[in-house]
Length: 203
Image 1 (cartoon, rainbow, N blue to C red):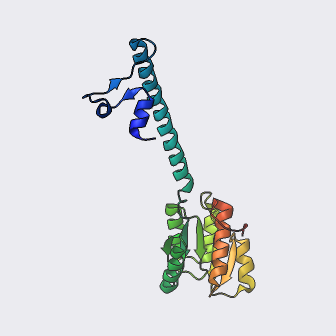
Image 2: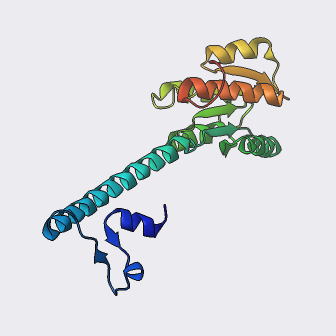
Image 3: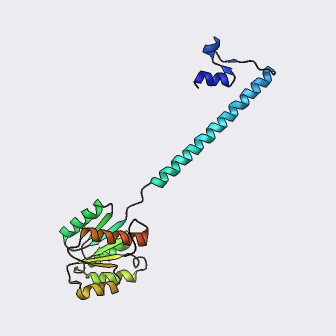
């Protein structure tokens, strides 16, 4: 139905149809005053309904937007004294939608963990200013850091070192060079367990 038809249907003839400068009221069977009241009442009711419809549409749009809003990215701290490895690993993690923090020694690892509160730490064992085992020990001594999952990534032989790192609080052990997909899978699993980011089951 067009605008003119709608207007006539509601009891008001448009000015261009009636040949007047302003809308002309159609006559009703009841008194003119009663017709005006009914028209005014319908107008108020229509305005109210339109307002409710707009509010409901806005609510639905807002809820839909909130449901589709992306989750903030997980923050991963990379602790390694090899600058090339730090850069390569950070680039790989950022390409998979993670934020990264790079640290080069054991002392800085604890200080940065306290400051940044990363969601996960990738830790080398052979570090200056406190090796990886010292970092693991110190992390366990701070309640705010003790629950951060730590994945050890080291060139050291797994024999002996893997068991010791797990007993020291590490979540997983990888020997360099690690398989990228396997490492990412463990990272996602750890984040899913501790923080609710997508992944498989706990590591």
